[in-house]
Structure formats: structure tokens, C-alpha cells
Image (cartoon, one colour):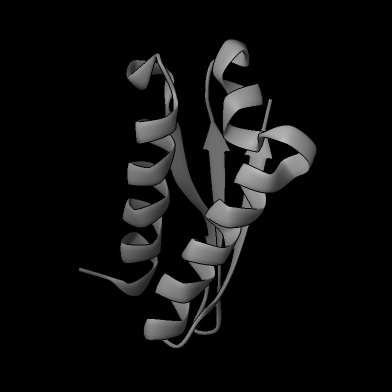
Length: 83
């Protein structure tokens, strides 16, 4: 399993546990190289508020966990939430 797919799987798992419509969750690796990985998260518009949370707290927590997973692989991670 590649390094970026590990980070993607972590983000996908967390997001799918938060949303109500699990089928609408789409997590992709938007960009990746030896040092950085960018993950894009798309959900239904109803669930996006849940994923971002009040004042972005949930989104910040997701980014923190993604960075922890990326650190294990020697990467920097960026998580973008797309409407």
C-alpha cells in the first residue's frame, strides 16, 4: 500500500463515520509527490456542515489526524473540503 493511500484511507474512514449518507463520500488523492500529499473530500451538501463542524473544529481535527498518518510515512498532508 502506498504512503498516500494510507493517508487517504484514514481520512475516508473518519469522514464516513461522521456523515449520514456514506455513499456520497468521495475522498481522492488530488496531488502527490515524494514529500506532499493533497487529499480532497467531497460529501453531500447536507453532510458537509457535519464534516466541517462549528468554527471548523471537526475539519481541523481531521487535518490533524491526516497529518499524523502522513508523518508516519514521512509526508506533509493537506486536506481540502470541496462543496
